[in-house]
Length: 256
Length: 68
Image (tube, rainbow over all chains, first blue to last red; front, top):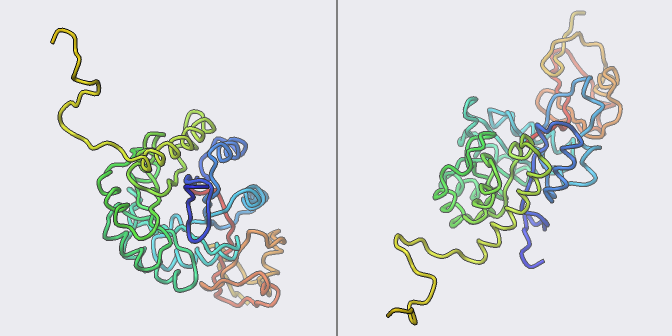
């Protein structure tokens, strides 16, 4: 494939990564993931409870997709590091989406704790994919610390507000030494296309598909949007100007 | 003896001798997808049978769940 996406040395056939939370039911989740074309799907790590033990995400998903565990809900580097180690043991993967939440209401990352967790996990051999703010400085520090990619938010998790600060995302993409994966905030297909047009290497989303009117159809829309946005990025958009530029020739007009 | 341990945040009497015994008491027999930490350190499934539990131990038993 000419336009292959490589993440931490792994060639992936899709630039869309998708979550497994909040679907109406298991069948819709599986159908939506299939329709999205994603190869990487995210899961959380939670304490077992006897009621839900029977339904194993590993059995359900493990054979068909690469599972990317997250540290969602952790508020400290310490908890995120232990969750990552438990995830590695549970799933046999050293890939980890590191989330360290600093604010329960906005779910914004705690940058200081996130950096600390990233450093510790990189030192321990993990492939670290940090969920972070849309801040070029934070992204650079995470990349310098050894993150395999940076995953800035477009808007707060689950908000569906799209990309609130496209200029910041564009800056991050222009300067990043590692792939940029737009994570969180996507509401609909045009948001995913915009992320790709701004230069992101991939998009990670969940709620926009899981809670859509028709999750399977929205998954297909996201797939097409990511592909379309990527093609447009590679094609190179025209510059924005503040005046009109006629597209038809100005010579040979009748009546002149 | 009134020795307590904490399992997933909940206190309970220490009745299992090892991690494996504790897991069996909860119906967890297949290690697939399950991970255990004792006092903040992961105990690999290969060591569940031999890892002895003691009073005051804090045990976390986790598995993958839906997530974004």
